Image (cartoon, rainbow, N blue to C red; front, top):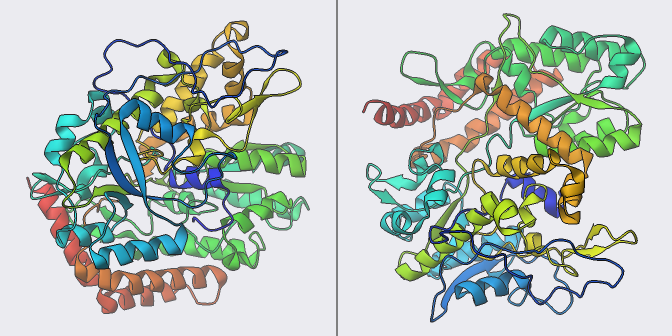
Amino acid sequence: MTNGSLSRRDFLRATAIATGALAAAACGPTAPVQEAAPEAAATGPECEQDWVSGWPPAPIKYDPVVEISVPFNAWPTFKPGHEPTDNPYYNWYLEEMGIKFNIHWMADGELRTQKLQADIAAGTMPDMINLQDPLFNQLIDEGALKEIKDIWEATASPLSLDVHRYPEGKNWIHCFRNNRQELYGLDLGITDKVFCTISWIRNDWLEQLDIPMPDSIEGWDETLHAFNEGGLCDYGITAQKALFSWAHDFTKVFGAYRVMPGLWRDYGDGKLVYDSLTETNKEVLALLNSWYNDGLMDPDFHTLDWASGLNTAADGKAGIVTMPMWGTSRIVEIEKIVGGEFTTMPLPKGPTGEMGRRWTSPVFHAWVFRHDLEDIKVEALIQQLNHQRELHVNGPEKHGAYGPLDDMGNDGLFLEGYDWEWDENCEISLLEWQTGTSFRDVGFHHATYPGYQRHADLNRQRLRKMDPAELTKVERFFIRDPGLARQETAYEQLFEEAEYEIENEYLGVNTPRMNELLPDLQKLEEEVYLSIVLGLKPLDAFDEYVSRWQELGGDEVAEDVNAWYESHTSS
């Protein structure tokens, strides 16, 4: 997902590690708005700034300064004269909160992974780092991580605890140990439904053919054939090699049959079953195979990544595109290229009138701390998180903080000469540096939370309801993009259809046996599913897959999954 084809901002959206920002426990009454940092360029004589940029006040200032060693990313582009440890964002936390972030090492991608592995082997881990399972679990077992429950609960602001849904949110399950008595990481929560996909359709083609919006799988089938046979496109629907990914996926088609490959589900008998093995999947695979045989999908879709799949629509070869809500900007770009109009589609009904879509798992990254880290450093990091939560939730309305109005949150200081400059009409124009997106290494910067996108949307919607004449130039700037308004509408649709979401009911820590067996089982599943869609294997290969899955250790995996499930449902 995070391959080189993603832009920097798209990477932040896709991973949902968009800038965090919430309430500081020690803020009390709203403090006066702070002046912009001195790095801002002087306002031009012909243009007048009609707002004051600020940030929420620091919840605490440490004296002496607390120094914290963290990995830095190598990719940010800094304005000339600035660097990773000397820039407006970094300096604010140093000067206002007394927190100094030192570079443990600087790397991205595979080099970052190698450096972390070397640290683990040598026992030289950074003070804080962001990890995913199963490495997170391994380090807990090895005693390499600090238990932080008491510090977290004593330091996190009420707002931080609330928006992160602590302790009952499902995002915390994998962070707890010893019957929730110990906490070894902070899973601050991925944005709600950020990977739930939406389908867009060429509305101009529907009007041209005088056919209604399809609202069923049968309607999808008829519409795709009409687009193709009517000569409007070479294929019909975008696709890529990952059938159940976050782009060009077919999960809504499976959901219409109330199955969802890749998830563990309880069908009412108190046991979890792996839904990829459910017999109903054969009906969906047969349908997708017919679409492929009828030329409704790129014949080489199995070689495409998500970006290449999107080009199918940009080339005018497909009339239905499936992307997350943050892909709305891509849809708008495609409209300009093809001269057509896309509109969102409702969830399709299946043969029995049912609907379904795949959820976004709340379990994401865990921020963890070196086992012997001083308590004050953990506390300082949590206080920084408190500040960012106040920034994002209340910043635009209470503190004159405009970064959180950006798409998926810039949350920077929004400084003239750094984030923006005046254009020839004395309106705001963004610059490439941007204090928020460049300095994501500073502690919890870019840590999201479940309601993150909703807060950004609500702040912009509040401005849209106001008289434009009453808005400042910066407020008008953040609501003038019609594509962003369309994204907000698409996101609202995900919440309106939330009752049809199919969840994964296994959120436990994989056992060593599972970690050993799952790679081969997942490889088998991907190969069989794709081969059936492509017609390289007959539909009966599905039954062989079920048997083979069991032979390769699937039953042992199911045993471990259900042991966890029983322990979490028998209380």
